[in-house]
View 1 (cartoon, rainbow, N blue to C red):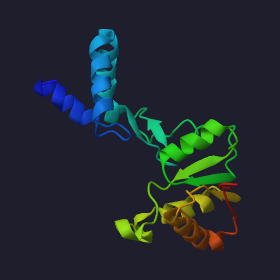
View 2 (cartoon, helix red, strand yellow; view 1 turned 135 degrees about the vertical axis):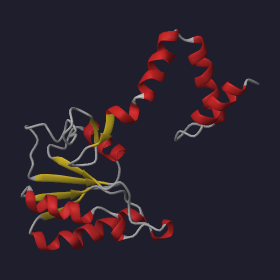
View 3 (cartoon, rainbow, N blue to C red; view 1 turned 120 degrees about the vertical axis):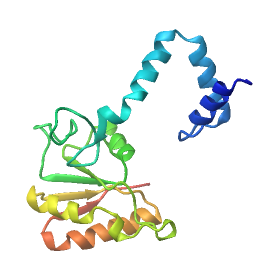
View 4 (tube, rainbow, N blue to C red; view 1 turned 180 degrees about the vertical axis):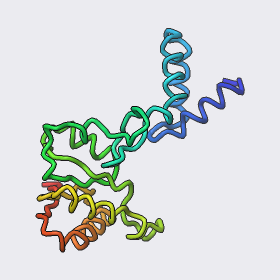
Length: 178
């Protein structure tokens, strides 16, 4: 694979999480031998990615841009969801995992990151004020903290518990391990 275009594409693909150089090469070879429609569709969707998908204005999940108002995700606009229950997750992929399990009937709040002193992420870098405001405004009764069972996840859970302590909301921690 000596082509400059091929090397550039392999370099870009290998920057994706979980994709090394060999996997990127396999993707490139697959796209070159697959029906042209696949690579054309993929390229078109990737070129419009940032214009059509944005973080949900309420929870931080992925939302499709519709009109000029704030973009809300399918979960936030689902009237069958229990708005009294709020599950706090670190990242969107955590939300997707919980949704795949099918047991969450409430709504979500995506932090975007965890407390991490080693990476320079402090309490002021988390959207805690927005979380507290949402809990109060939407009259949330139960908060489920679903941060990972890591040092950073536990520290973030403790911060959330402390900050929501004066709201009167019931706070629980998602179970982990056996």
